[in-house]
Length: 452
Image (cartoon, rainbow, N blue to C red; front, side, top):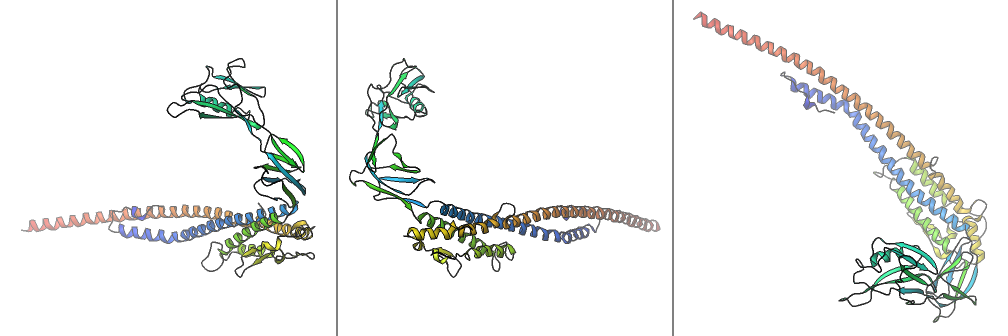
């Protein structure tokens, strides 16, 4: 909008006219200023709902993870001694016990080039940009970007054969001699050859292996097994990664059995997400608080959260929040006492599973997940509908502001045109009055002159 200071007049009243225009436009602009404040409030409320969506979605994910954890076998793997291996359990793992004895972690076969170079960035081996790598009888053609030791090392590492190549200085710093050391891609013996050009070219490696690799040797439940990898499968969906031998500790026992540990972890995540959602709602309660202060969505979502603690079961050792170690402090903050869920017998673990999610109604996890999903559903959820209402309102207010601006601009333009015409008319009359005043004054002076 243009400023009234742009009103240019020539009459004696032009300044007064400019002030009239400025006051008139300012008064007409008041509803638009009010609408702008309303638009800002609508935008702030939409942003606040988006923040709430994030917190409630995190809670929904935490409850979904809890539900999945309860639905699984709740198996955990423990070793009788630490540092020997780590275990990974898949979805189809079953309970069991394994005695593990690791006698040899295995080693990789390695070779070194026969010749060395003074500068691996400029000097190469052989005269051909093409090399042939032979691993256990399988040929791979390497095309180097440059005939240098560095380029050769990169080509071997990137060849897909599993081999890795390192450039190593095998002499003093004063007279360096860089050679290429190749390491096999599996634990155990491998034959490796590197030819200059095609398979008939000169062999670039030392004739014998720098070190001969060997397999991993371990016993599981007394049965000797050899492996080309340190990650081994003991049973369906039960694998371990070996990291040390048992020479000093003796055989270790791996126990795969049901445990509440995973459930406790998921409950902790749920508690954290629940408190985060509650804290975000608290930002909009009370005087001079957040953008959603006084909006019904705050009380609606608060009720959804409160109702979660009302779930109960009729039988078993776990029938309510308190039984599973969940409780609220005087400020409404949820916490978990994990000791209530540790050292459970198989019978009590079954009852815990029943309470949390194995019942026909999905248990607490299913009940809570349904309640939170009703708030977070992409199109029909409480938060999605609330966000849509603010989005639609914002669009309507933006359109209204645009139309008000158009009307205000038109009104100001008309005012300026009318006052400009009035100012011009008054200026013309003033010029005429000045002309006649000057004329009469001239006539008076002339008359006085002639009468003398």
